[in-house]
Amino acid sequence: MNIELARRDLSVVWHPCSQMKDHEQLPLLPIRKASGVWLEDYAGNRYLDAISSWWVNLFGHCHPHITQALQTQAATLEHVLLAGCTHRPIVELSERLVKLAPSGLTRCFYADSGSAAIEIALKMSFHYWRNVGQPRKQRFVTLTNSYHGETLGALSVGSVDLFKEIYRPLLLDVYTAPSPDCFDREPNESWEDCSRRRFQAMRELLEKNAHEISAVIIEPLVQCAGNMRMYHPVYLTLLRELCTRLNIHLIADEIAVGFGRTGTVFACEQGGITPDFLCLSKGITGGYLPLSVVLTTSDVYSAFYDDYVNRTAFLHSHSYSGNPLAAATALATLDLLEAPATKIRNRELEERLRRATAPLNDHPNVAELRQTGLIVAAEFVASRTTRMPFPWTQRRGLRAYQHALTRGVLLRPLGNVLYIMPPYVIKPEEVDFLATVMAECLDIACA
Image (cartoon, rainbow, N blue to C red; front, side, top):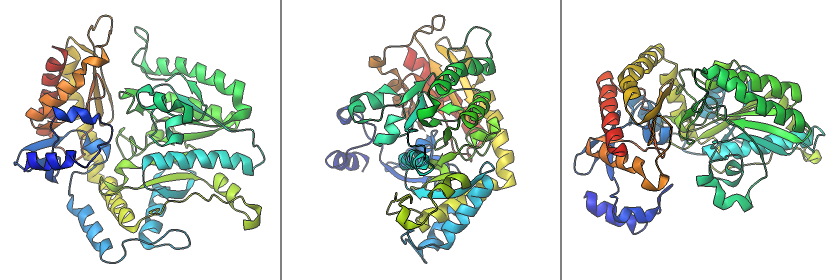
């Protein structure tokens, strides 16, 4: 059945983020069912989902509490347009998100994907400045090595050339500041000192161009698709202070890092900040259904609140905005996230990940082993002394991916970076198993 399903797939399906010609030699992985951290194919082989299926699955596959919430909601209301209508799940979800988010975020605008949330935040910021009489503020600022999605606006404010370069003629012209990531920090320089030093370039850029800048967009603490590069929370604090002083919006893209991935519910908490826009998706429904939301402030909301004839309304829409099924699964996910037992378990999981992966520091090809909360990444290089990377054309991460499958683990390396971002229900012995497989993958990738 595995082979037959894969054959049928390749005759009709075009897969995301893939060179389809690879699958002439690289078999697809047909998944029949899943439970907890484990996926199972049609031959009965099991694979530990070490990356939470692209970072969406927080509490394991087919969690009974979320499944029950979905089934109950499906029996009463599957969908209704959110323009002019409302329903209990979306009201309750909005109330809970506002309560959970950093103080001052009071309004929720819904869509169905992370990229859509970024588009909404960009448009809201741009439109806000027009509504308040500052139409010159049209430019956006992003960080090198950032990633915010694949739609044109989101792609514009990202800076990973692998995704962006071919489409550059279609994109917005943005300012780009150096990333605060700490991989290339000076010898004996701390993460905090490195992030502070790198902030100076952002300060100079904003102070020079504040009159035309609408917003700065960042991924707080971890640039996930940018090879899981990480930085110190002080950068968030400094950036929030500067944006406030210069009258510039701050957009926090927590699509990947929100809902506990960095060790706090939201990464922004670690910098003690409230952004003007908080973009959320991925884990919000526990991996069940597509949903995204942009939380913003009363000040932003008020700039659009006007008589219809003044044409200041935000007329952005998605057909499935605020879908009741997605909202119900999000509410069930928040039930699990906010449970005291989850907070205790996640603290223990963070420490278990640290201890289990610590030996990878000694691998002769690991330039850096880094961790923020429940995200661990090992960056491997050709020379640890010079940090010379392997040529990208050698696709050594693919070797690691293929070996992991033979050991019953689903990894998806980012170039020359192996990372794990497992569901929160993973057991201690499964964490140890992951660390063992990561070590093997490093040996094979670097051979």
